[in-house]
Length: 150
Image (cartoon, rainbow, N blue to C red; front, side, top):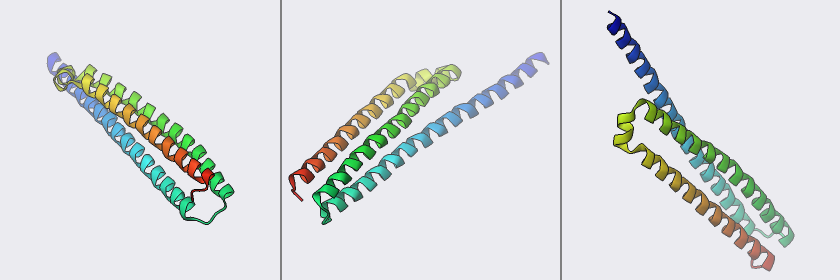
């Protein structure tokens, strides 16, 4: 009777841990989707603003002010998205550790350490490329406005 009770406790613990791991995964999935949406909305708004600046008959001073504001807003957006991304990477590491602790056999079979390491690397590369591309676009726009090209 004692071992049967112990078995029930283990099943309840396994069920609770499975729910917790599933919760962590769902949270990470939603965080990744939020980051994607933030970047998409930001780029859409920036593209609209840049398009307006290019085709408008605004004075060069106003265009320059708009570009300077775009640069400041871009820096703030990069910081915000970077903070969310950093939290996502921390959550991914926590998920990996939780999964390893409670599903060690599956952890080894799925090669979770390698998967999370690759996910972190891809995330960092995409972030770096995005920051560089954004910086180059804004710099080019600033130079074009200052030279009077449009």
